[in-house]
Image (cartoon, rainbow, N blue to C red; front, top):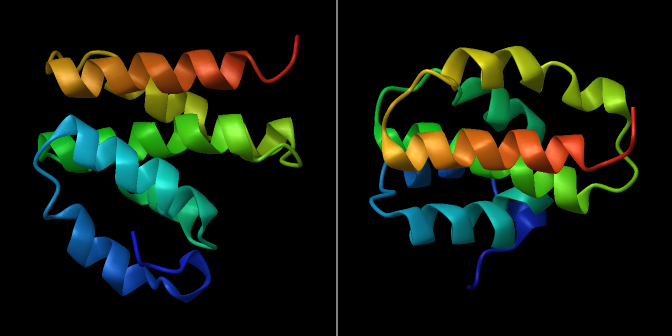
Length: 113
């Protein structure tokens, strides 16, 4: 891991997301790099309707990572994710379905409300 989150660009993220081809590479990239970038929330929204399995998984893995790590984020930052999660809940691909479930659980665990 040599990428610096502060120097990671949206363009790099777009290029890299297209190369994801396994759940572990996807989740590792989301958790170890992308959730620490200034573009994390925007990319989680942007990737929600992607067709390729691991690009779409990246969206929800990123949401889960943000829910766990961004302790200063308000509930309002996560509310726009809920319709995306609901929409994707019907995706029957294993790796997308697991990440959708993961994102919902992590957002739900942030606080009682």
